[in-house]
Image (cartoon, rainbow over all chains, first blue to last red; front, top):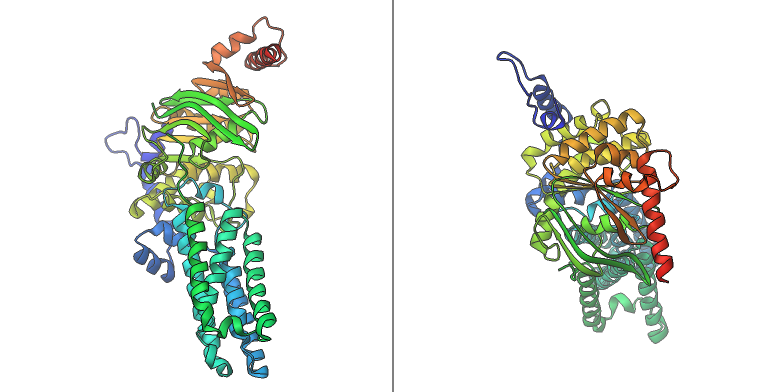
Length: 241
Length: 254
């Protein structure tokens, strides 16, 4: 029997009453070894209409349980400080935490099989965008929950969502262009720190970054620019004709 | 032809890793030989649609990989084993092969059977549920080969596939190459001339980004006869003679 026959389970010259053991074994092995996707992966597969994309989503490093717990711990600490000091620390921490998570969503050094993933039919750009959106959504949810618990900062409960979008987009763009999650983290954290310190320097109010509504449009414009950079950096390369 | 390259070039800064390669390959096992830094891996990565060429024409499976749709179709029919196989240490062999079967857009109903067949094909059936972090280097290589063949590719690109395999596994692997070569284009980049001699129908030798020899293993062997080139085996002597002649030609031109 050759390799082709092994794959198809076909013998060259099976006797009339032979049982094709290879074929039978492959059928058994396929059932025994079969992995049962969890509920999240099944739901993602239905939503995205792609089991491959769903599988790529549930392997996101910054969506793994340990990472989610670490994110929750940071935000719980923010809740504690907010309740203790009356200052909106959850609002200041949430964008930074989200930026780190998004920078670590996809890329070389983050995904061990990144080189292989790039040669797959499911586009790596789609994997990147789906993972980034999922990490953003999870961080937004956790941030909202933390904001709701820290009632002292009710005035800025939603004020951090727009800056979080901008900082996350900056981290994603930097990580994508440089192909380095660490550079993405550094860019996101540095950008956010500069924004906060600029508010402190301009108006002696470091919370201006999340409370001043005049920043909303600049934040959104900046986020749009960063998304454009990501789309450009992940475009299908031309010049292959 | 499943692979058609015309004047394909890839630069990294001022370095030309691949310098105007023109090549065509149909079904069969195609060996890509050459010393370190010859440009074999860059050429293979371009054929795997991982690395875009700087210039030249690349057609794979009669499609232009520059467009989204054709590129996706190529990738559905492609098997690729990179030189450095990255893996998720917590995945089992089945998880690993299944992950790439899904990313290759295989119909989900076909995936379990295809995964089992690929794993059995590379002889890892007894390790199917083992975590990748517990496997030896040779077993990891075989898991990498399993993900490459899981979709029954029409174009199979293997970069140093026999690295880490023991002699018995290498013999079995050459049989697998010959099987696939009957219905697909298999391109194997390797340092090991005995792999080429045993499995390849056509061989190209690269040096400094260029193809300096293209022919059958027998023709490469013939180049070494009476040349006094270094090498323990006839094919190695052919390899050394062609490389020496190519470098002498370059030195004479400059």
